[in-house]
Image 1 (cartoon, rainbow, N blue to C red):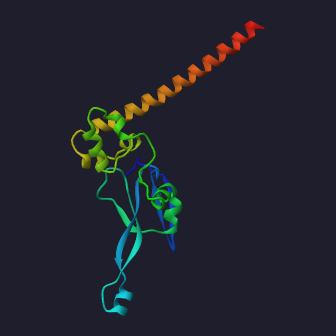
Image 2 (image 1 turned 90 degrees about the vertical axis):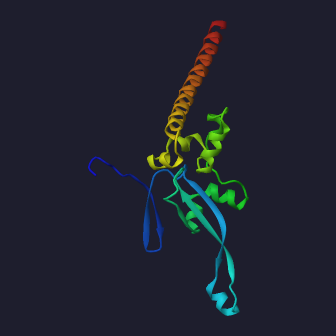
Image 3 (image 1 turned 30 degrees about the vertical axis):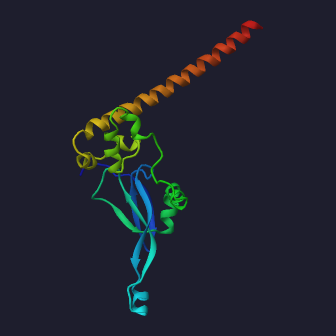
Length: 181
């Protein structure tokens, strides 16, 4: 394991123990939902099975199917994922912010739909897929990851170009004002 570095990005405390977090929370697939859970105490009292609605959270990396956290919600989860929690409370879709993956495949919407089925909703998520997620998504996934990285690189290059154009226009206006004076 020499040469590898593991940089924790945070720690979640659960009573007397903590869980160290690695990676960005902003690109994780996080879904709050209500699950029906049997209440053994009430079942014993009534003599019939009794169920309660309990809010759960499901957390996983985009494209990952084996490494999924699925458990009852804690107050820490609401603080850690405030955007998704607010969307759950408002009964809205709980997808991460970013550039929709549909923009990468305008002529092939089936690819975008297949990626969404794997929990990959944004180009930013697609660009950061793990090797396991690429394998899970299947044939073509590495090419799509490369396309996403290229798209994001070109988008950031385009931003710099637009900023340079704005600076040049501002400089031209300043020169024109000085010439007019």
